[in-house]
Image (cartoon, rainbow, N blue to C red; front, side, top):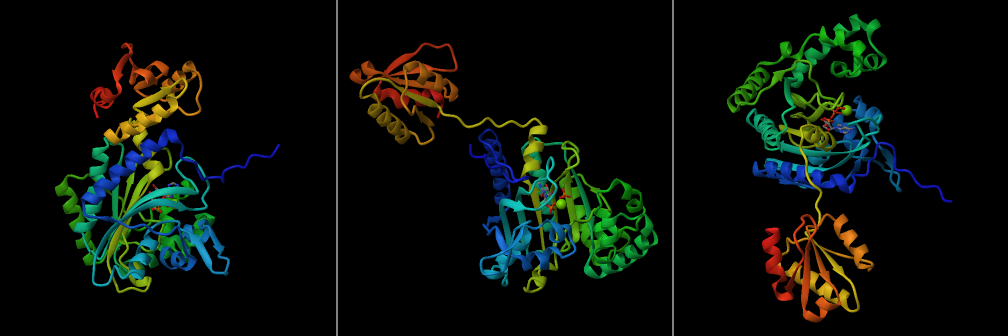
Length: 424
Ligand code: ATP
Ligand code: MG
């Protein structure tokens, strides 16, 4: 026997029983984001590797260890996108969208990172990504956060808290960085291997360490907020004022840093304790230096990305349920010449009301076998066509979810009768 092929570890099939939930949640996010004036953009899954090296930063975990990188057939190095912001800015520049204009954009789709697969952490995962390019805030920072708060509220999701921080402008972060190197060098013998590697290259990332043994050292480290430049202090205060006025609760977490190099000033994370250790559901921040780093003019920008797998899991943990879509009616046809009639009836119903979901029995079978399938389809009604119905130009309507009697209606009354029963 031929061996069955496996799926790649950490890359999941999203099965029919959950796609309704995915579709529903994606549509709610999309509607909210669009109602704030953000437009969709669709981007390639592949970009030149250089894009991510230059934007995310060579010393980040993503670029150092997690990218799916391979040479194209002509030898150019390509990478499956690990996140969307870099591609978004690249697309803005490639298409002249940032030339004397601002952009409010969203995109969604799969991202790829070679991580250790576990609950809430996969190698192909999905993000909903929102970016405002050309805005220096803090109003837009607040808007992007308030938009998330509205989303949680609309979906009845309560088990989320908001943490915010400011990473300051490059100059103040440089001073902070030096102080951090000094501090961590002083306790170097207590640092783990990852942190030692980050010490010279990317000391802020040590603050993001998930190693429990490092927590005490991290907790005692100097904090960025003490190093902020005046403008960043004012910017951060402005954000807090707007969040306060909007009634959005937050905590300032002075140790919140993000895993990517390009962030500056505002960073934030929506976190839950309901999903175990993979608690970051939506993460965002300001990246005022990125457009310039990728060859554009100095342009402020900010965005967030939500992990759809974690979002879906949290929705379920908060009691959210979306029923799978099923047919309204299932057509059962038994006897000579009834299949042709069944098709005509099905298409006529679809003509009469495009929102009626009509499932046709396929592959024939006895009356009993077809009724069994009708029941399994979860349809509300079976529509029954036998030789008698064929001759009389009538059809049987049998309720499948109640004990009500089967009735027989003339074909020309079928659509109106059903619309009344189904309520469409
Ligand atoms: P984490 O700290 O959990 O690794 P991150 O800081 O790497 O997250 P971002 O790069 O900011 O995450 O991505 C934004 C969001 O995408 C995260 O908040 C999370 O919900 C989701 N996410 C990131 N990596 C994964 C993954 N490997 N599998 C599933 N979701 C992910
Ligand atoms: Mg990560």
